[in-house]
Image (cartoon, rainbow, N blue to C red):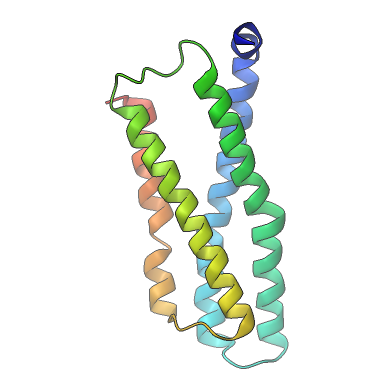
Length: 149
């Protein structure tokens, strides 16, 4: 198995990066949709229904598969011999940040359900502030992996 992972390393790394890019695109866009949904589609109607469809499709068709692929390929990279030095700080920082990113993904999934049901108590301002969370986590993850502190 270790030989296979070592041989497949460039492909695994490529697929991991592609998955991360797709996941991040969704994590940047979904809270922005929430801002507009919370501010402009507060009552049932065509606009509300349009946001519900957009948010559901983004989460289920792009974000969920991308998150799963990110985890699968990331764990394959972790299992590849010689790639991760668990004696360093950076893999622990990355792992904690990826767990935080996954929590944020789940938080967004919960807010999507509330907005769809018309029960959301969050303002556009809250969603604007939360929209910065994936950016901060991305900065931490990229710096941890590239700088390897």
